[in-house]
Amino acid sequence: MKRSALPWLLSAALAVAGAALHAQPVSKIKIGLVSTLSGPNGALGEDIRDAFNLAISLNEGKLGGIPVEVVIGDDQFKPDVGKQLFERMVKRDKVDFMTGVVFSNIMLAGLPEAANEKVFYISPNAAPSPLAGKDCNPFFFVASWPNDAYHEMAGQYATNRGVKTAYLLAPNYQAGKDSLAGFKRFFKGKVVNEVYTKLGQLDYSAELAEIRAAKPEVMYAFLPGGMGVNFIKQFVAAGLNKDIRLLLPGFGADQDISRGVGEVMLGINDTAHWALDLNNAANKRFVAEFEKAYKRLPTVYAAQGYDTALILDAAIRSVKGSINDKDALRKALREVKFDSVRGAFRFNTNHYPIQNYYLREVKKDAQGRLVNLLASPQPIMANHGDAYVQDCAMR
Image (tube, rainbow, N blue to C red; front, side, top):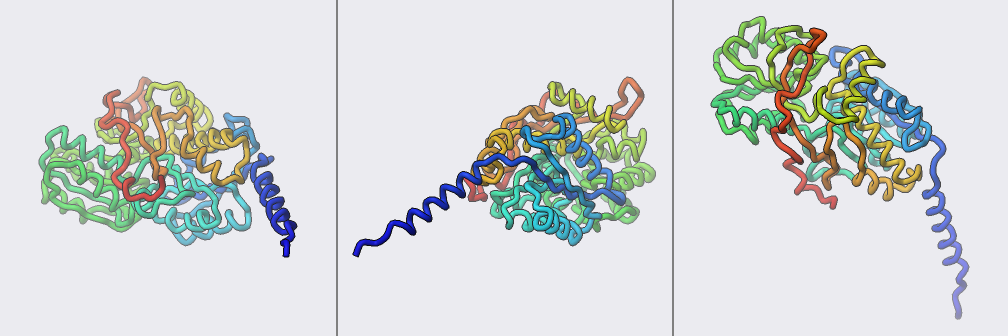
C-alpha cells in the first residue's frame, strides 16, 4: 500500500516556516542587565551600567541598527537576589540577552537561568575558571578577562623583577581562589602565606599583623571595590608600605579605588588589559565621552561594559538582526570583529578572550588628578589566553 506524502510535506513545510521565522530580523532588542549597584561595591556595577548605556547612546539608542531596551536590576551583592533577577528577566521580561554581573558567585547563581533558556550571557566582568574549561557553555561569552589573567601577569611581573617572597590575600570565593592560583602559576619565588578572607570584609587588622610578621618583599592583594579601599588605607596607616611593596590587579588600583584612598596610591603598580592612555581611536573616544557624560574617568569595569555593548552591536549587525537563529548568532559572536577600547581582541574556542596585558602605574595628570596609566607601552604578555581552554569541549 502506497503511503501518503501529506505528513512528510506538512512537516517539511513547518520546518521551512520555522527557519524563515528564525531568519527574520527583530524590530526591537531587550537586554537584561543585572549588577551590584548599591553598597560598598556599587561603584563597580555603576561603571559597567553607565558605560554599557553610553555605547548604546552613542549608537543612537540602537545595537546592530535595531532599537534597544535595557532592563536593569540591582543584585545587592547577593547570589539569591541575582538568581531571582535572572529568572524574572529571562522568563517574564523575555530579554534577548543578559549581561552586567560583577562578582563570580552571583553570576554562577544566575547563569543557568539564562543558558537553560538559550539566552546568551555576555559577561562584562565575572569570568570564573570552571566556565573556561570543563564547564564551558555555548551561551556564555566573556568580554573582560579570565579570572586568573591579571594575577598571572602580576606573578610574571614579580618574577621579571626578581622578587623572592610574596604574601597573597584574597576573598574566599571562586574569583579569589582563581586570582591567587593565577599569581602562583607565573611567580617563581616563594609564597610565604596565602590567606582567604570573608567576602565583603572591611577590617584587615588581623591580616596586617600577620603580614608585618611575615616580612615579604611583595604584598599581592585581590580585593575589589570597598574591600580594596579599606585594605590599602589600613596597609598604609600601619606603615607597611615603607618596607613591603604593594602590587595589585588592575581594578585594585583603578580610578574608583584611587578616589577613595587618595595620594598614597601614587607609584603603586598594577596589571590590566586596558588603560586610560591606550593609544587607539576607539579608546580615545570612549574615555572622552565617558568623562563628558558622567564627570568622572572610566575604570576597567567601564571599559568592559562599553566593549560588551560593542560586541553585541557587531554580532547583531552580522546576523542582520535575526537574533532568533541561535546557531548563526553564536557563530557571529565567536567570530566578532569590532574596534575594542583595549586594541587587539578575539574570542578563543571557549568564548574567553585572547588579548594583551600591561603594567600600569598610578600617577598625576596635568590637572593634578590621580590616574592609572601605562607604565610601559610594551605588554607583559601579548595575545594571552587562559590555562583551561584545552578542557573545553567546544570547538
